[in-house]
Length: 141
Image 1 (cartoon, rainbow, N blue to C red):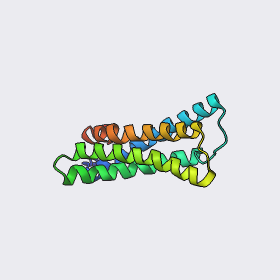
Image 2 (image 1 turned 120 degrees about the vertical axis):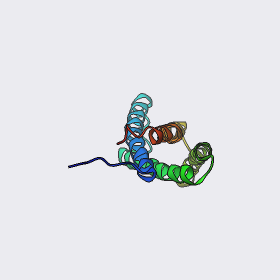
Image 3 (image 1 turned 90 degrees about the vertical axis):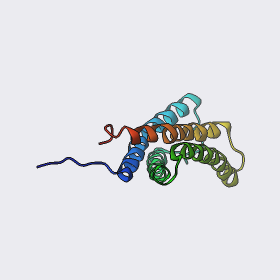
Image 4 (image 1 turned 180 degrees about the horizontal axis):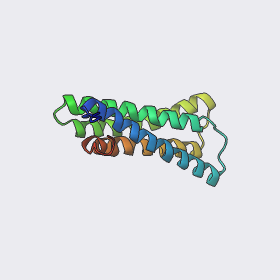
């Protein structure tokens, strides 16, 4: 039986996002647990383990899918993708803080640090690691 399967660009994009998402889920969980234990910031539980794990994985799978479309349909897809990821990461910072402010009022600096830290991890993996995995498909296949 032959189990050789050649990866398509679509499957490489999705698998790159999934692999980056799993790494982000672990990194974000460690970051939040360490940060909360160091600062004793337990006031806002909206960034709990379930949200971090599913949010990280789903966000980076979506990034892998978007990366496929950028690489497949645009001439300078990788550069354009990285610029868009940086812009969206910055928007997530702002939107996360605005949503918190609209729901609870004052935004503690510890919450801002949690949002920024988790999104920096996700943004870096999306901008750097997904393109790397996509072009080095031996890691994900």
